[in-house]
Length: 395
Image 1 (tube, one colour):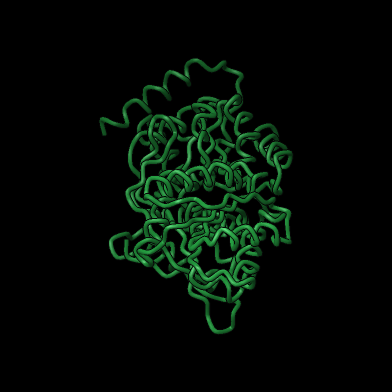
Image 2 (cartoon, rainbow, N blue to C red; image 1 turned 60 degrees about the vertical axis):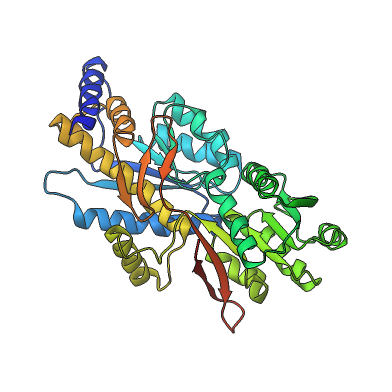
């Protein structure tokens, strides 16, 4: 209880400071979901929509009698910065949301998050893992573990599978902020693990032909390839790399951490190693994950992936933050002025741990996530060559 008292103090101070004619918060409490529902990034964004929908249904069913309901307002960001800026603007100015979950891509976050920060509206990033996201401003946080915490695990797993690995090729989408940030983490991990980088190849997220990059990898005689990109481009690169005869292990970044990659690279997806901040198999000691997996399978007839789980977690922590503000202030959320509630929710997000499908997490005062559990999975394709699963590997 003592940890939550600053939330109450901040809420009361802010309530008193807001002019009498200021706008009241709407009820149910509107939360914006600004993710990619179109463009090549929709392969991630639609998974996030699914996860957010499960969160709203679950939270509605579990809501206490004295807790205010939440409602999700969806805005499509597309796959570029302009789309994210437009979506954030609509959520802030037209929809008057209390908080925003999004956007899908880190590159979009660097463009759109400052708008919310300037409006003193909390943003919880569900999939922005690039360096520098929490540093955008005091109203920006994330439930997506940065790749600096996650990526090295997959390289170490590759070494366990093949201790003879020595020569590494690194390929990344240089026009995507997330991929450029992630590849720097991978290259540092390669160096720290005593491996040699023999090729660094760039491509673009819009590319479909990777002949030049693959030729360089084969010429360098790499026995491990590490790929940072989005689903469509990275999946096509994997497929062509295998078709051209590359037989070494492949480590994929967060962009390959989606079941939507299976139909892109098909049978050639088999064996890819991916470090993950979420595993649907980690349910034994986590009742929240048990419920999430069960509800997700019932609704969509498939196993949830990381992008769905992180979107669920982002909606969940905002809803729980609203409930904490109500509990500690003794006021209904709709009694707050909108500006005051936004600030109080931002403080509550940083007030203590949350048990989510990702496990127990904390949002630190800096906005960075503190997460205990990290996993590495291997893609196992089914005989049909279009479906598969992420099989948890022993760390």
